[in-house]
Image (cartoon, rainbow, N blue to C red; front, top):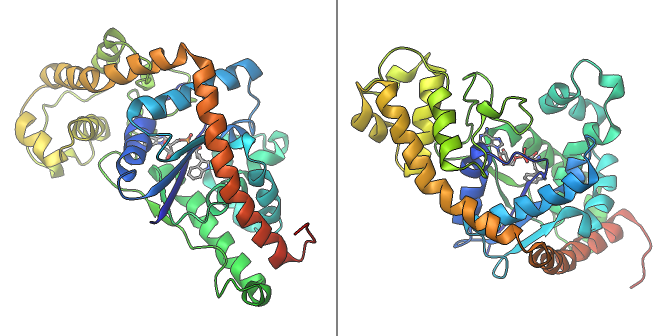
Length: 342
Ligand code: TYM
């Protein structure tokens, strides 16, 4: 069975983009793959996090996974910092990846902003840790949103260079031609890039200062309706064909969200709503979002009332993840020439 790995950062404000772009896909893949889903707390601290808030947000992402339908017994759900191999393998990858590769990462440039001298070293090396997450489990498939594409290409480059640099000892230790698989990113469906509700040119993000830019997973029905009502749009009615969405980023985004929530294509949505004003479409969208999201929000609240249970899910998942990752790391050590207890 092919193995899937993916991660979500516990940095607060989990939103509809994370849900439709990633978590829904995580749920779907459970029937065909062995899945490992990780709350990447070590990635979160590349930017300073309040410690109590980090722990709260880690439990919140875990609750979202479970509420959305991820089965932590059949698959693995854990938080990254409980498995030491992530840090250990990331160090090796710090020595495989090149400065030039990381300098080209657009997310680093965006997050570091103008004051690059003052960004943490971890923020720069972030994609190496991400490659370690995936490759510690020899995962072959990684479902993510569009914004992670460049990071996944880097993970492929790291795997390729490692396989090449150590080809002799990879073969002599009995691993054949490739130690690490060349991972496939899975970026598919109508929701790979959900945009801000305030600005159709910016992606919906956890760090946008405006609450109105995103639908939070924990929003109640009133908040969802209000945010869609206030969502920016143009004055034209919806077109009847997908082509008519060109140059109308905000309309395109809302139709895409509707399609993803309804498991339809944009063309189907427009065949129902072509010619409608936003004053008709937005309430329909809000009703659909509430119907789909409210049960998840209430299940999250129920789960979060028992943090001890959530922590035990994470610890149990970490124990099973560690067993897989340590085996990979033993192989890495043999291939590199690190002496270890056998
Ligand atoms: P993060 O925490 O920013 O986002 C979690 C997932 O949500 C997707 N996503 C979106 N999808 C559609 N529209 C949006 N507006 C939107 N915003 C976010 C992201 O693409 C992601 O799939 N570096 C990763 C976490 C990570 C990871 C990994 C992922 C760490 N290690 C290994 C895969 C494999 C991140 O910051 O995701």
